[in-house]
Length: 375
Ligand code: PLP
Image 1 (spheres, helix red, strand yellow):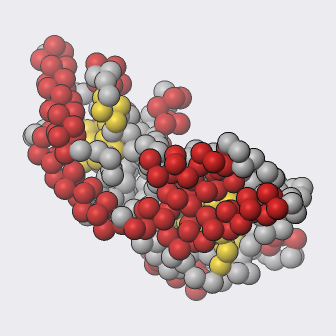
Image 2 (spheres, helix red, strand yellow; image 1 turned 180 degrees about the vertical axis):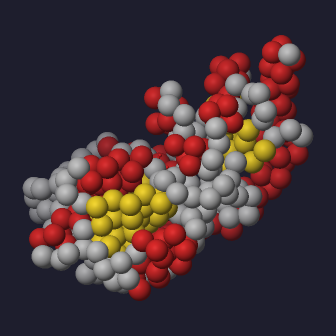
């Protein structure tokens, strides 16, 4: 199996598996318990928190672990709107972008059904937000602007620092979904809230985090013991936190090496695929570990079925499962046929050039076979 689905999830780093084992084995104590065992587990979580915060590199805030980035996103969006409402603020509008992850768009839809005003801005053909459109919509009723750094389907990078500065000038807060960017590039200064996930950086699934600037903490989403900073309840898993910390530490240490590797892979993949492929979204403002491409007349789903031992996808795991055409490809102006002829190849730290080239040559051959069969 050649694994080319790094945007869906990443292979667990051996260092992470090693770090996790003792916390699901003999050291099972509740990290919030005052016993010596409990305090040891609690201390391991605090080390992990520092490792994740250090890799994130943002100043003036705190990081709370959550059960996923999806939870962190729900918490940030719902919690900020609720907090402002409780404070009697007239700011009740959330502005977001049409290419955001379902976790953002569906939460915004929920908010719209619960009294908030939601504005979803379109993107240009290259996947980038037109900042003039944002400037038009920002006003003194805007509570929050939500924009992702790296898109999970097409890899396009939004100008998050500029978006944050514009939101702040209008007196609003800025939330950034940095799930696909964290551990792969520097997170720009500016956002007040940032959501990340461990399993996209070679860590375990089932753990994410929300970083919040001091003073910009959202109202709680999950109520109970208030274990995380008094704001998020539920017993933390030392194993998952330690795994997240180990993955973040490794990502920070290997940042340059991983980045160079991914750039080389992008070049090798593009060459191995040959002519006739079009990159979806900007080729300049993008993360190079995401190659979302289309080819005239291709049936992407059939290609995936034809190449059973190469793992790649049509877009986000959610979109693939539902059979719905991707909202991201639609937002960049692709019609149904073009979206159907698109595939996403995702590669990274553990992908070798040889296996990637091999997979791309097979993809190109299978695409050509489809063409000749259909002709
Ligand atoms: N945001 C983006 C951009 C993602 O790619 C994902 C995962 O697919 C998420 C949010 C949700 O992350 P999690 O799987 O931790 O809930």
